[in-house]
Length: 287
Length: 341
Image (cartoon, rainbow over all chains, first blue to last red):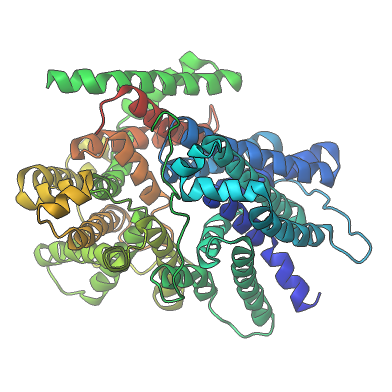
């Protein structure tokens, strides 16, 4: 496999999770739950593929599980105004425990599932890569060229003003989070199906790296996707270098996204501002 | 006191009832006998000296990380970097301990306690600076520092410090050991609970004293309650924010003392295993009060020890799920039923 394709394959789940984070935060909801959503999506995909024998149903199940997990986050944050960071961390805990629990229950192992088939290729094309390209373009279009995107950004930027104009703030935020769940759930399905199995903790911090990509990408879909692609490329490059016997310590490649994010929020990579109401709860009753 | 019990009693009762309901639902759902499970929880965790010892050992670490998060929360900051600060403090303490083989215990142990706090504080320095000078959100910066700490200590252990075939360092000199509780009380023999628990309890008292009985503590709470009001009454808010994050990091940095000085005597990759994150849950349940932290730490330690002790009867993952359910339940009950913290 040539290097460009390998980069795309490694980056796929990062890019999807980064798009997911962008949608959620544009609507004003911080989504630290991405890590848990990836994990739930990955397990659901393998379970469905295992039970039905159809990897495509696996993909659907991954998306559905992602939406469900995100719905829990949305329910806690929007309905009960639980702090978004707290809810996100709790969702991640829950997902980690739940996945191990189901793994044990279904496969009798706490470390990995049985092998499943992945989606077949479309001629020379990998369906995941086709989907990825379409989704990145669609995300950009949805955010900047549709009234949905405008309304979503308005509730993330200034919910009171949006409400005055008749935008249903909480419902728009809910859509942002659910869309986020669908995208990250797909990312999870990609992660597990392309490995032909689910392994415990396989999200491996990708959800957090995606958050980093959202920040470095300046809360835009294309920016976040590009940053995620860069992190994927760094990981792929490290794998390739290792096969040539050039050993860059893994740990330094692992640090890269986080160090860059610190530089970004420190203002070293130019000024980037989050949506003004990002992370601030909104209650319908308030004036 | 009575008013406190009344105002806190409502949400605590509701949260406890709901959490128990979730546990029983899970147990019944798995087709196990709920009475048996409850009985085993009491006999294998609370009434078994080993189980209680292990619970207290886990409680100790969670008191440190819970205090770290509670101190920051109290002052309006969200330190989710306790995990990384635990590794930074633990590693620095181990490196210094290994470099000073000849010191007697009376010098070495206090020195290592200070060094571990320094390491944790050091790891919060950059987030504190970025918060104070650049307004960078501490959730993002402390989270990023977590991953950097984990990767960096993994690298240092594997590249420089590890004992071949293991993922941990050499053992520290014997003078650096804190005594196990089993050395004094026969009942605790074989369990890991050690003198670090006393350090943790003393620290809880110190944090309480600092926040409620000193002028600086009052200022910090004022910054947390209303930064603008604090600013207009002359508090240098930015430098206080910096101070809080570094102090919070120092508290978290001390958590490694329990594992390293009290139990294994070496630094091991990933030894904190999410205890930094659980510190956030502990602080929440405690409503950021140092005394509450002690009890909340005990609660989460009990749940995790129960998971291990009952693994033969029900999968311990059920207790992991319960821990996260408790977080949701507690926060929602507090929002709905409790007085504002």
